[in-house]
Structures are given as structure tokens and as C-alpha cells.
Length: 150
Image 1: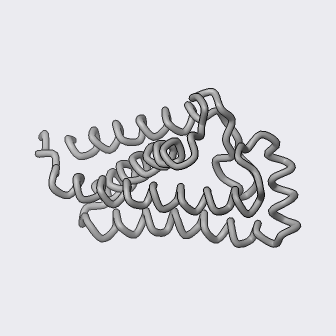
Image 2: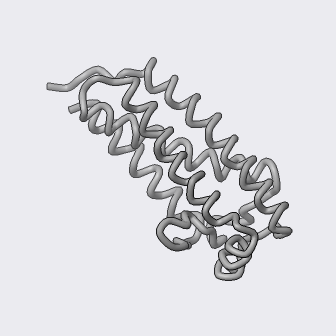
């Protein structure tokens, strides 16, 4: 049986994800200013500098909080577990893409989809070109749409 896609709820989640992506980008702009770096070129150096400034543990808590917030909104909006998972994937995907759009608007970064970024610091630094998380986000959003239709 094909379900009707819940556009009204997914639009609300999309707006939430866009606002949250903007907020996360603003935080990263502040972190980069504190670290006195415009580009994340040497991830190892940034990691060491954050540790020296006692920012690493704070950054880990921000990353955990991000996942908790994205999970919580998905848990609140839907009753069915499949829909909750789909809502998380949808929200995460939009949030992550809009995070990069926001950084581009705020500080003209990244310069291209090939630009290397530090994606997460938990449990250790994950780095990849920007196209990797953007592609993963599009895939997550596609899976979410599929889950809502089946």
C-alpha cells in the first residue's frame, strides 16, 4: 500500500532543519574566529589547537547535542517508528546541506565541492570533501521519501 506523503509535517521539519543548519554554521564561524582560521586545511592542527584551548570536549558536546536535537524533533512529530526514522533522515539531510549553504553565504566557504572538511570529531576527526556529506544527505532524504511512501 502506498501512503500519502505528509508534506505539511515534512515542510515543518524542513524549516526546522534550515534554521538549525544556519545556527550550526554561525557557531562554526565563531569557532573558526576563535581558532583564527578561515579554512579547515590542516585538520590535525585544528584538532590539536582545539584540545589546547579545551574546546574539544565542548565541541564533542555540541555534536552530541546536534544529533539529540535532530532525533528529538523526529520522535515528537511522528508516532510510527518507520516514520520517525524517515523524519530523522529527512531533517538530518536538509540540516547538513543547509549548513554548507549557510557557510557559503556567511564566509564564502567552501570554495568547491572538492574542499576538504572535518565532518565530525566524534570519536576522532572524520574528514572528506564536501561532496561526500552532501551526497549522503541527498541519499538520506531519498530514503526518507521512500520510507514514507511504503
